[in-house]
Image 1 (spheres, rainbow, N blue to C red):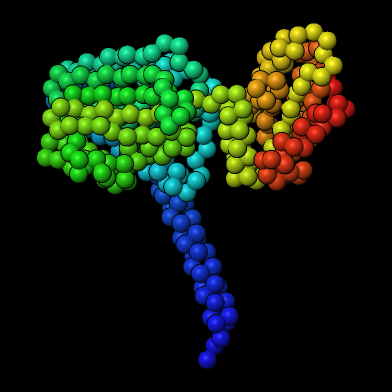
Image 2: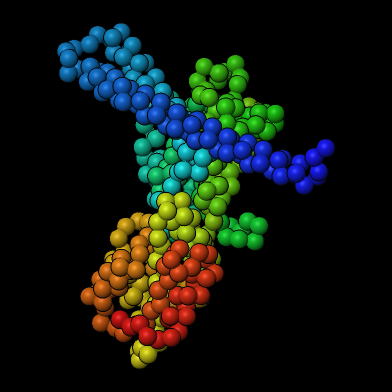
Length: 384
């Protein structure tokens, strides 16, 4: 009879093999979804372009019935394209392969842009679209294209499930939620509403609203699931408040990062991106030791110059230590860090000290990376 240690070892091996099989199957599924989605998009793009050209009269004049049938075809091509996008996005979100391209910006401008594009479709349905956006909101870190995707999905649902001559209203504001500042966005409609039973599964994938009034228009339930995951990847939350035959309010929040919180958030995200892509990450900390004039003036000039010296949207510039230091996070090695510093030298007429640390060469976790850069900074050996 096998002893207990032998049994545990065998069970451990079996568990490891099962996990490997699960990961392999997940990779196969993800690759399959990606390939099929891309293969479907190519012919759909050609079909849509051809239908659009005929609708525009390029191939000759159309009678009323022909125009109506082609419009139906084009609308369904658009619907199919959105469905493929949702499937591909959900697959990427599920496997952790999606990358956010966040930048610091105001949420109201994005809301206005999405609403301007949505308004013709809203008015065509005989509905109204109103904005009530708070002024003076803090700028926040978010991926504009992904948040546009969320807003488009929620507005599309508000149109789809609204009543005749219904209203859609979008609010923005800033408040404290669970002790932290957050931007809150609400999309409100006067539609058919959602029952408590439907709300329970609303954000689960493949769980569309399924009523006799809406079944013909609903998709496969991925839009809201994708939207909620996008918001979660921003550190926010999404939920719904609704009453049957009264309307619904879809709400999402995005965190406001201040001072050192902003640095911690960006460094963690940059390290995760570097780890996922098997790349290096350089952390450069700048101080004002030895600067004889206003420290704040020096930091302001450095922050402005640093923004013009980094290479792209994935590299970040942020303040830390209560605003006393400037950090650059760049997806590069020591040679690339040297080039960033050289570009800064060409822009500045002030003397500032700095420290550099490279992930994963010099530090494999966040604390050690910061400690190494701070140690160099305090040593006072590097100046620009």
